[in-house]
Image (tube, rainbow, N blue to C red; front, side, top):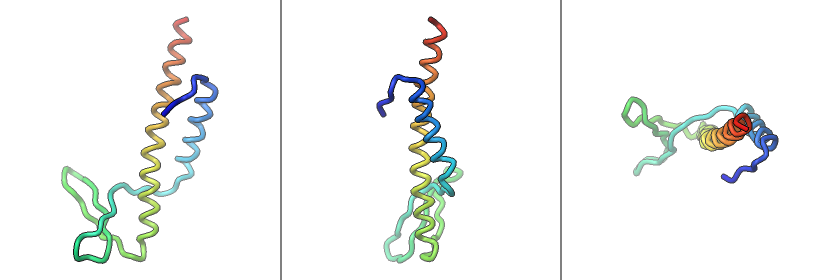
Length: 98
């Protein structure tokens, strides 16, 4: 991600991402998979070093898909926040050493 040099713009970008995270709603990590021979979907993830599988009823599928999409967006936003904060810290350290 290319970031501007201006600390003011970086702070505005940081606030915008924090607002998006705050207003996101529920998140649910994992992968939605369909096993061969099954009509329903399952959510799989890792827990305690083992793969966990959770049956998702078709009545809840759209809701779970939204939560899963929110999780992926949240991961991306946190990574962007980290980069923005790193750039702000570098600028602050450089300004203090002048």
